[in-house]
Length: 137
Image 1 (cartoon, rainbow, N blue to C red):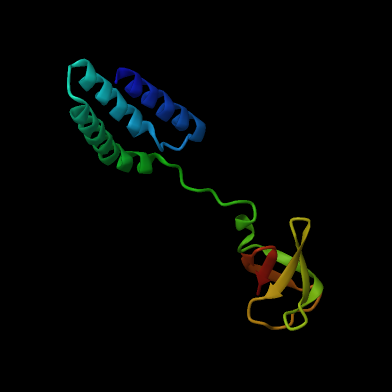
Image 2: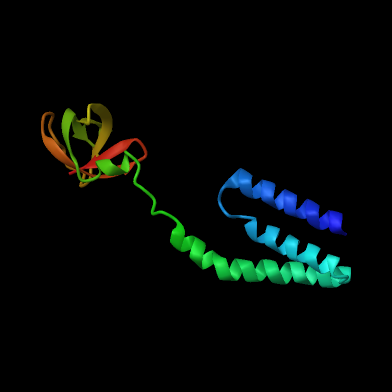
């Protein structure tokens, strides 16, 4: 049974290193505890119970700490456009499905947030982004 615990530790460690997201590190600790129980002469049922108990305890005790360590998600470049100003390069008309605005040197399809027409050349504020469309006001 020692081979099984060693193999389990290796498999869980490989999964952990492959994901970098702390998804199986607790199972490595549980498998180590199962191996220690096996070396102490415990039955297979006791080894499995020790594995489950230690894995559960590690998960319960460390998961809240891991969540606190995660860095806050940074906005993508697109998310940073919200609140900025853009220049309408092609008149915006939601009914006709027309409109284009330029922001940071890039041209975007644009739609009016309230459905009103916005003429070419007007400076607008980006309210939100839906897919590849700026929603402006």
